[in-house]
Amino acid sequence: YTAWYLRRKCLDELGEDSDWQWEIYFLNTIGVELEKNYQIWHHRRCVVQAMQDPTREKSFLADIFESDDKNYHAWSYRIWLVQHFDLFA
Image (spheres, rainbow, N blue to C red):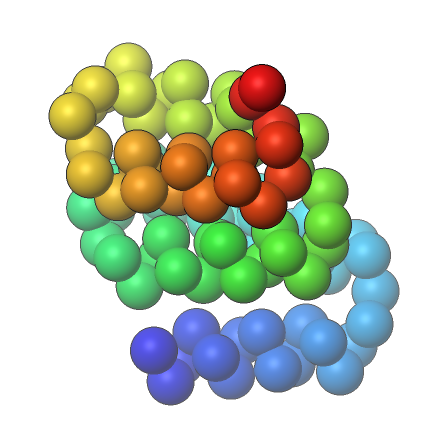
């Protein structure tokens, strides 16, 4: 968790929306390859929560579920999105 925490801390210090958007792009790129890495999912959750903008998450999750519709981490993340942002309701 430490490396991801330090990434978030740097992003927070920079304070630019474009940096957070780039981080989501980065997570999209590595998230598909490492879709069962819980640290990446936790980092993604923290980034989306900091941005308060979950609009792109539905399409990202659709891509993940297309490759593995039983991905526990993706389903847990989707549940969090529903509870936190009421995104899919």
